[in-house]
Image (cartoon, rainbow over all chains, first blue to last red; front, side):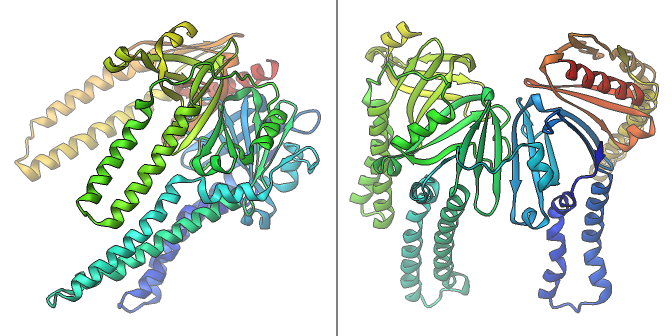
Amino acid sequence: MECRPYGAYAVYDSRRWWLLWMIPLLRLILPAPYTVVALVRDLFPAVLLTGYSVAKWRCCRYRLTESANGTFHRVGVREGIVFRRTLHLCADDAASVEVERTPLLWLLRARRIRVSTAGLRRRTDAVLYLTASRTRRLFSLNADRKARQRLPVWPVAVLSLTGSNAAVGLLTVVPLLRQLSLVLGDHLSQITAAGPVWTGLPPLLSTAANAVLLGWLVSVARTFWRYVGFSAKREDEHLHLISGLFTRRDVLIDCAKITAVERRQTLGMGLLGLSGAVITAAGYGRDRGTRPVLIPAASTPQFHHTLSRLLPDYPACPLTIRPRSLFRYVAAPLLFLCAMASAAVGRLWPPLTLAGLFFGGWWLLVRLWGYDRGGWGITDTAVSLCYPRGLALYRVQLPRCVTDCITVTQTPFQRWRGTCTVQVRCFGEKRRRHRVWGLPFENVENLT
Amino acid sequence: MTFTIGNGAKGWLYTVWTLLILVIGSTVHLFLWWQFQPIWWLWFGWLGLWITGTLWYCPAYCRSLSGRIDFAAVHVEKGVWWHRHTLVPLPSLRTFEIWSLPLHRLFHCRTVVLRFAGGSTRLPLLDAETAARLTALLEKQGELS
């Protein structure tokens, strides 16, 4: 049975032309007189392109085939006017299905469904716009809340504040910019010949500091409203994940397509005893902005309990080989700290060197933590790695069948010390390489 | 089921080839005219290239594509300079698509794209009916499996 997509298709397809509707507003800023002819000329491209999106919607057709119990079985999508595309996709081949409800879609009583298959493609295979009721029926999105693993709010709040190292790093830039604006302001006030451009720098830098602070606050808010109320449930061979406060996302992932489970802890989360889990599943997490999160943040007992409920049969193994070479872990942060210390001794702009010393010290702590907890293990069914990357610690569990290649590398120094670096390459949408440093070579050789 | 390039493919190829020669030749000449001086004898070179493409490459390309689909896999052979034989097992197929631009529709041609986990393969310039029959057969094979 053929049907047209819901009208939200036209709305979201024409979204890319919304900036063109702003041209008349920009023209108001200009001193030139505004005539009706100019208004029509300005709006013509926007009207034309929006009309093209509406025409695309009218030409688009879905052919949805339902199985015996009324769930999604097969879809054929025919869309496009100039570039016409007909797509056929079967539910059995779908690795992940993401049902999205933004505030606008909630008002329109529609849902956006992204269906992806396993593969190297960098985009979602099919994007459908259906009514909310039909979506619930097709994808069995029932309201059964009892079997869901729900997380408390406070770990999500901690995750929002500390989970993004880049966002936290922005906070160190704010006092630097304010200090710079004060220094420049004092310096320029003593120069009578300073032009308008130079005297505008101090307020510009203060504005930049405010913008950076606002950016950090927005990052915290975005992370919080993305993961508050996160819940997960195992439904037969699928994981059903629900997340989002304003934009709700229901994600159905085929458990057989999960190729890696990563436990992630920043130092802040580690000090508070929190962990998060991220999965790598074939066909999920391709689009920019998607986060294949399984557990955003939970205390250690709840983390293990939730993981055992959601993925009881996922292969795992302990870490059998621990790192032996501390130098490899601490060399880079120590070098950075020495550089900052020498800059401090040389009295090179104290706020910058202080921020650098703080960052270097934090980095050193993360590396020491990674050395203490790091390791590698392998059994007949699973491969397990633990290593620091950036400012976080990752514990990765991989089924052995998705491990494509293991590389053991030794530099001349490592050969002398009897240590090595182990790199594991595996199939997945993101992060296909995992590396552990400073392992004892003899033990690694015996294990592999 | 076997398939080859459609009858309209020749018209599509000749049109695209001619447009390509015209566009590239005009661009090169405009550039030379602007920078140095017009070199009119270059047009004879472009004409020679066009004749070679029209009389030899386009028919060779039309002859190069062939394939068949059986109960196990899709077999595709294509390529003029580099001949390629592609085998796609039917269970590996994830999705398949039919593409067409206005020029394709003018000459009654379609491009079928077969997507599998490791990538994709294209069957260009099939006849529209052949493309429809091929995708219907793939759909039916998918149902049976």
